[in-house]
Length: 109
Image (tube, rainbow, N blue to C red; front, side):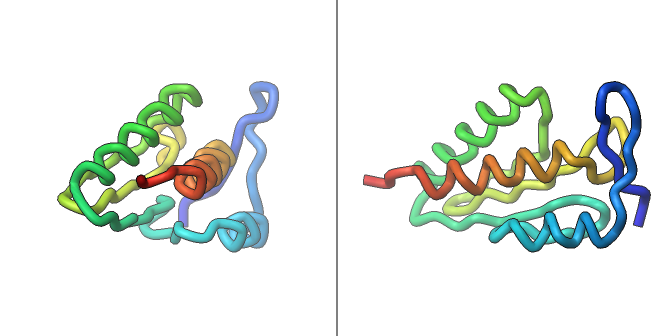
């Protein structure tokens, strides 16, 4: 795996593998694959998938951190990593957690 780091006051701080594993355990819907955090969330229909994708877009824009998002009928796939570092950073884990929290808050009525 590529080195994992995050920026702290313009300094690069490397995460130990154990730290990354601990952060990953705190996430419910994400897994690590090919140096990315990835998830696939399934919905009852296209409208719900698009609504969730738009929620992800809004969160991402607010964080100025933009994952790859694929919308299908009834599903959204997200690949999350830091393009500048070409790997995972602290900001990826933070955005993944925010996406999970927002998913739990959405009312589908």
